[in-house]
Image 1: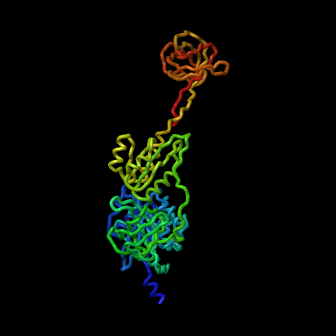
Image 2: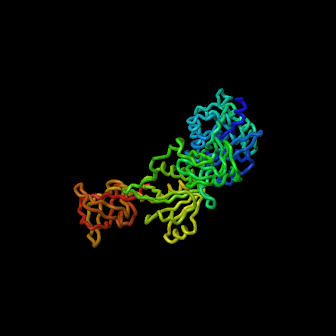
Image 3: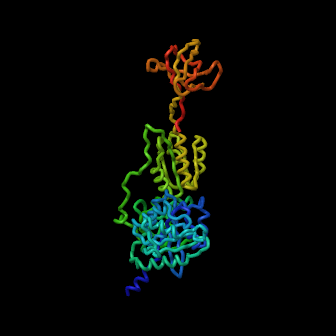
Length: 492
């Protein structure tokens, strides 16, 4: 009877795909699904967390595809918490990289069973053995080297090894003997959320247990609502979803946050204990210091997860002498009300995969507000770093050039004096600044407007040689005065 119960309530495995940027996570899923999502992403780099479901040997497997860029650390961590298995993709031609190491940390923290997929084995420079050695440096030892971690070589280009990979996923999942319990209350995890301009607040949800059906009431820690539209991961309308299904849900009263638990029921849901973990921390905005220059920005993005990733990255960045202040942030296209939040402050408007609506464009043109649109996150971060650098005025740096001892006064003119003497250190240079020293104290300054050596015009006179010069100054120079010759340069 127990076996029958297990069979009825068994569910598809949920696999989170992790790895360094451009190591082929999305390409592997594309080949399995025979789709081409990777090429549609800007720069061929996954910018959002996404999910899909495939069928293999009459069984389903749910995959969560995470971005590899360092800015999406929080997304990857969120994806790791949902998963039964972590699929760590390592490019055989590059080996272990920064985000590979971060992924290993998440896997160990969450104690998720892991499978290593060495991708790009079809490349001539592929070196799987070297990649295995690099993993061992981070205490990941594969089975064929005496460890416990299963590993397989694959090619997203040719499809080599992908069926074996799916077999392995099902085997590892079955060995865990995961059986979900019956529940009157449906439950899932918000993987991503965004504002659909035509349909309203939308969330990508991985269902975990219980029933999820159209017209169900729903509740998260930050919002509630009712399911108006339920779609599978391919955006096809469905009436109900089962455990482990990736679905799109429209019907939230406010946009839910990525990573939140969402509950579903045929009746309205009271505040359950599982949702009481609301984030009571104050919203952290990059705070300005009045002593520093400030760059104000309004930031809008297409999804909640992406917005949070950008904000966390900005908080972690060092902008030196410039304070970056986010005056306002949100999801969806840039509106007139967004622009008005800038007030009188000079503000940079940033849209990540979103643009201003017609009214917002009119205000921006009227007040000459700068707008920048981005499709790739690292370009946004790099541009802001460069913009803040340009706001910093280069510091002046004094460069000592030489010293001259004045032994002859030739003429006293309207705006200066003609004097001469030996260069006792360094060199005298035409156009250089001069501090005039008398009895070891500075009494004033001037500029060498003309310079001669042996009655011939010259640009510079070296140590030990006699120099005659016209010094532009309002001082009365005396014999015995010492000129400290220098120039002022912008610090690099």
